[in-house]
Image (cartoon, helix red, strand yellow):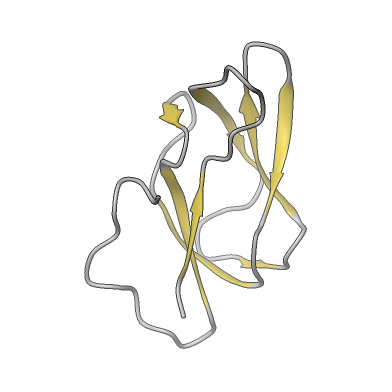
Length: 92
């Protein structure tokens, strides 16, 4: 099943984060817990880790974009799994 990787809330007053760098390229294999991108908040730069193992099948946002909390950053799929027809902008 596709895993939608969303922008987490890293601080009490945080509303968004700046995507500063993808560490892993689209199409690469990832392991749960592996750092895959960097987010800058008003207080720090933080490595975000893959929430699941699989293929980083789609990067939704690019470096330099500001992403709201719960905004979908990427889609991780199991090997051989098809991309969902629709990828939402945010998840609840």
